[in-house]
Amino acid sequence: MAEGVLTEREWRNRRRSTKRQPPCWGAQCTMVKTPSLSSRRRALHAAMVMISFVIAMALPAAVGKQQEPDQYQILAAEWTAAQPVSARAVNEVEYALPQGIDYVSKTFTREQLLRGKFLLISDGRPLPKGVPAPNTMSVANYGKGMVPVNDLTIKSGKETIAALTRLFAGLRGKGIGGFAVCRGTMTPWEQREWQLERLRTLAARMPMDEAVRKTLAEVDPPGTGELQQEYAVELRLVVSGSSQPDEQLLESTAPGRTLLQTAWRYGFIRTTSEGEGFRAFRFRYVGEAHATAMTFLNLDMEEYLTLLHQKRVLHVKRDATKSYFIFCKPMDGEYVEFQLPEGAALEASFDNDGYAVVACICETPLSN
Image (cartoon, rainbow, N blue to C red):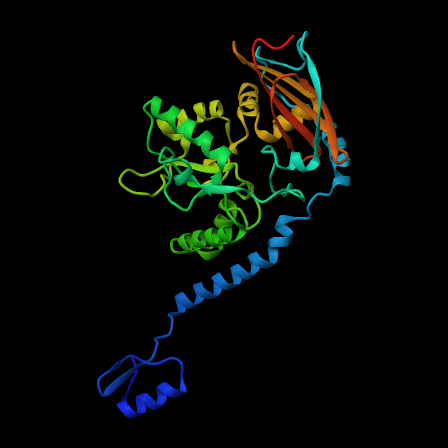
């Protein structure tokens, strides 16, 4: 370490001519020369800067061009011609409406549908133009301590947090604990910070090229993915005695299997069971009607939408007191009209593939 010694007068003169000043003790001041980074740290720093630049440059391509209304009809035609989906045959699901139901006409605007929670978001399907910014709040605060989190800054939508409260209460009723919300809605800036943090962690224990590949496979690029909306959360077991999430897959633990078997009852579906890293723990709140239908049919979200595009109507009998009617229609303009069961609770959404989808929750007996 190189040092230089100054008198107090010399130190005061230098202080007047520069904004930065060295620490001073009495009549002498020690000038400390900052040691240079080691070659390894310098290489890592340069790599991080380069990767940040690449991410920033690649962001427009990753997000893709937002869909415009005149594309909807083309997309609908493509999906109608898709191969039939192999759905599980169950007595609780029919593809026709029962007799003796009174219907009312209901019209939805594109703006209303874009506020729905059933948008399919994937690599090839970015958020469409006009989707409102997420309306989020603190999970810890709004959950009133009933929804465990491993970070007090985690945010989500009001409807999602309410469903999480019911889900965690249901798990506790089964004697299952140890789960926490580890991630919720994120801004592009928060996604970028998460991506770089993950890269730093991986680069400390593996070659840089492998760390980059794994980071991109595990973490959504900034401005993409389901965490842009207020309906996706990451649910994980937390290591006992710490705030660190457990790395074990949900299928490999008894509490994880219980979560997978229970989540649909509260309106949650698992986004994917094959995603790397964090994606394997992601759940999405789609509402009880869609979650029940997908579970009964044993379909993921994309397969389920393909089925809806082809069948156009589903009747799901959950139990003796509740039924769901799910309608699907191409969205080829700014408005779409449905004939829906009278008195039903409605959840309408655009699906990001050219269709409007309306789920109706009916308490039995239905109006006649």
